[in-house]
Length: 198
Image 1 (cartoon, rainbow, N blue to C red):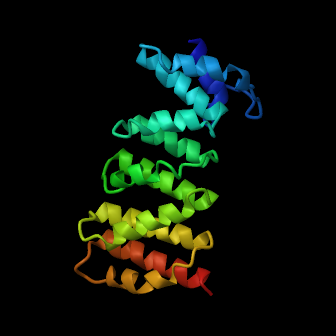
Image 2: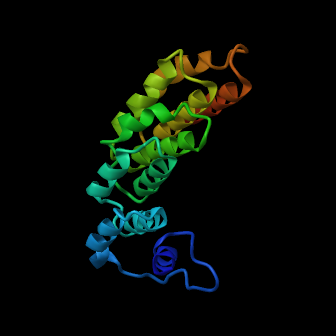
Image 3: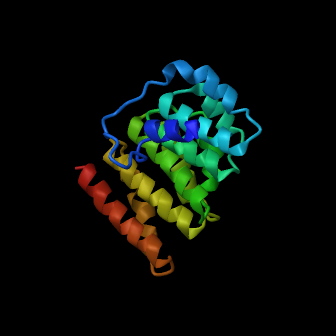
């Protein structure tokens, strides 16, 4: 219960029942304890400790390393995405996360959020754009993976990456042989790239 309350106070979006949104609790001194609790045999305790540590110390290399060892667990991808959005450098784990971009499930969304965080923060931007490029070039990429990759390319364009070399490739996704969602994503990306490269 104590961990549940602490998680609610340290994790964004969990402030409810009249608790002041500006209320901050400093648990930075408890990092060693939280790391110890992450090894607890009780899954609930492990999860709460990981959530709190991710919120308290989003740059924690040890936590990133630990989570990256178990990417088949959607929870790990979700936590890494949140840490990336909190400013953590995920460049060391992006390649491992790339294979989940093709997934139609939640892990695809979380892997996409990791790439987006890297592109927007600049930490691992080149690596993320390289991964997206490979996804778009591959004939094995599933439609949902293509849509995600095209969207990420548009985000890269908004963050100062020159994506003009992709105009020709994106135009090819406009053909009627492509699924409608891929066509729509390509159209939107071309519009953004055209606007951003001016």
